[in-house]
Image (cartoon, rainbow, N blue to C red; front, side, top):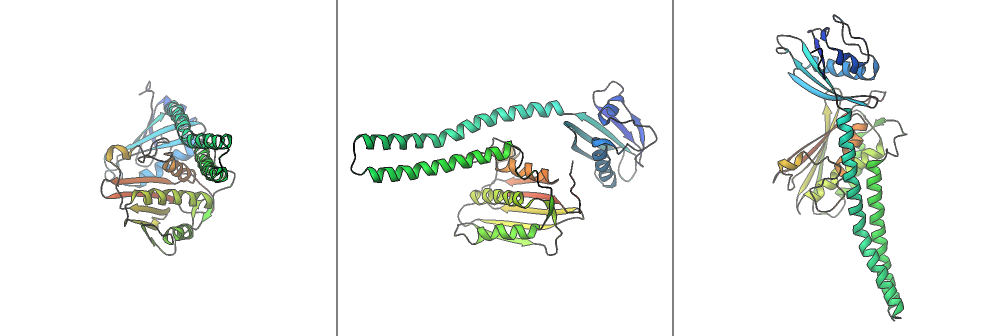
Amino acid sequence: MEEAAVGMVALDPMGRVTLVNPRAVDLLEVDVHVGRPLPASGMLGEELASWLRTFMDGDDEEADAELHSGSRRVRVRARRLGTSATQGGTVVALEDVTDELRTERVLAWGEMARQVAHEVKNPLTPIKLSVQHIRRAWEDRRPDFGDILGRNADAMLKEIDRLAAIAKTFSRFGAPSEYDAVPLAAVDLAAVVDEVLTLYETSEGAVRFRREIEPGLPAVQARVPELKEVLVNLLENARVACAAGGSVQVDVARDGDQGLLLRVVDDGAGIPDPLVGRVFEPHFSTRSTGTGLGLPIVRRLVQSWGGEVLLESSVGVGTAVTLKLRAWTGQPGTRG
């Protein structure tokens, strides 16, 4: 244990340290004393202490999380010694996964560069063909040149709009949010859901949208423009997944005392099990069109509010996306 590359800490039922190895001390960057609780100081210590309190107060036999300490990312695993009934203490493993995540990030950006090139190439081809058509018509002094110019100009403008949308989507995922300078605030989740859903419910589409919102809900910690973007992404995914006559259900309810749940459930085709784990990859899409960034953007934004995104899907049954959002407490916080 002394030479282990993974930090190890053993705690008694009261949360006091009974054993700690040097690697754990290095990762925590504070002195850890046997017989005392883990220090709740420093960027990692504060997150770890809060997470451990939640774990030790609960009934789970084991749990894991990924905590942030500046640019460092530390994976934490906790397991009870015995059961919650026997109160045998807890063992905690700390592993620095910064390099692993950095490698994944480099690979993801490489794949994203390939995807950008692919997406940009598609609109460029019709633009080029339109320009060539206009030039030939001009050189041939076509009597219907005005009509040809108008049709091709309209086509080019549509492709330019498409390019702009592609650029916005990729920059939205790749660069810090334009709202990052705006602090998190109390947001009326029910009001935002009502506003966005009204647009879908009044459209003449083949998919029905329904809602069920628990009354008297507290505000959540978020940013209004981002919350609207997240909801539109989820509703669009659900709408596209449904066949004519399909339905999308949106539910908003309390999640204990600490937050709210927003669920978007469709009865569409569903996602095969081997692909469910890949839907949050920045280049992956189950459709033949699109940038494959909708759900990654959703997760990135929700996590920036201190929330969590969960997805369940069954082929032939449909897909459910659940957002676990923090209730506003008067001061922005983050979830590890």
